[in-house]
Every structure is written in structure tokens, then in C-alpha cells.
Image (cartoon, rainbow, N blue to C red; front, side, top):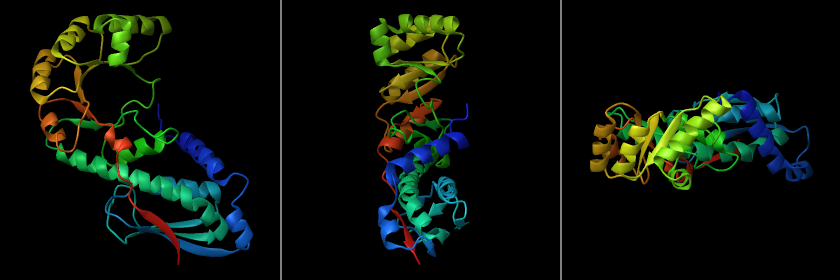
Length: 283
């Protein structure tokens, strides 16, 4: 399923505009002639990876197809202070209606892409892929996960519906690793759904139980120290994909990647990235 589809993005844009504009931009309606035409430019006030340009273009066209956008810097490019991302030309009311949504998206997405790129670069010498999580801003997940991709990361599941991940609470409520996995396999047979199963493990005993139960695609090693991860990887012996998760930081991710895990999931990519300052100014 293509989660970052044009249809999904337009639905997000429409909902965001309803939230922001309501029954009208009364600041502009009251102070500026409706037929006023001018221009604006996107000014970068930080350093890192720019993201959200393609989304900004879709926002602009959704608001007013007659607005013209001259793009100078594309998504994924390295930017520095005072760079100009793009120019906008057209109706002033349309420019001002687009302004805040464009900036809110781009500043958040650029911050996420910048952090993602930094972490991807630190593990590039290993086979590990950097994953995001569901720790996203409600109703903004599509943009945040898009930003992770722009920064060189890999999207994990988009929601509860597209993969089975048996986390610690599922395991505890189900009565253990084996019971949780067996129940999930029976559920898939009963419903006819084709979903991958991943199980979270907290210690080597749970890793062994997951291996013995089988019928899964990936084993998550949660909050394990690198030495324990290496033991777990040796036990798994290539039978299943291995994901490291929990408490991963820029200082620890390199050592974790060097244990030989296939994936490292980092919630901080989307919940703790510092936004990049950008502004849209008339000129």
C-alpha cells in the first residue's frame, strides 16, 4: 500500500486548511484588496537537510492553481542560513493563506530529515537500516514519515493495520511469547489477512522462545545492551530479521549497528527532532 499517495496528501492538506482558515482569512480579507498580486520567497534560517518542498508545491496548487512557484532547492538538498528555497508569485490572499501551512510542514519535515540524515550517515558502514516508528504527531504522520524518507531513513509500519508487532504489553496480556505468536498466527488464518509478524523480546529467554515458536518474520531486541544483542543475533542465526529498539541515541547508534542487526528503530526521529527555522517573506 502506498501510504504517501497523492490522495492521502490532499486529504491531509484539506483537513489542515479547514483547521487554519475556517470561514476565511479575515486578516487578509480586511486589509488587502482581493485582486492584489505580489511575490514572496522562502528564506532558510538554519542548516541541514531541506524537506517539504514537494508538499509545499501541492499545498500551493491546492489553494490556488494560478499561483506560480519557482523552486531553487529541492527536497533532500543540504541548505545553509539565508539560502532561498523558492519564490511564489500570484494573488496575495492565496500566498498568505498558504504561508503558515507551508512553513509548519517544512520546518518540522526539515528538522526530521536533518536528524535522520545524521543518524543514517553514522551507520552507513554497516548493513543496518534506520527505521521510524508510530511515535508521530497525530494527523501529521504522513508528512513526518515522508521526511524520514527524504533524510535517507526507511518507513516502518504506518499504523496498527499494516503489520502485527507483538510488543511487551501484547505479550504480557496474552500470557507470554508463545501464546501471543500462536494466537496471531491463528488470527491471520481465520481472517485471511497477509500480515508480517514481529515480536518484541526483552531478554535472551524470550528470544529463544520466539525462535522455538517460529512463524514470525522479525525479532525485536528491546533495550538490550550491545553485548546481549550479539548473543541474540548468534542465537537467531539468520532465521529471522533482527531489529534493535529502545533508547537509541546519536551516541549509541553506531555501536548498536555494528552488532549486526538488520534494522534500528528510533522514535526520536519524529518525536524529538528540532525544527528548522524557515520563513516566507514578501519582496
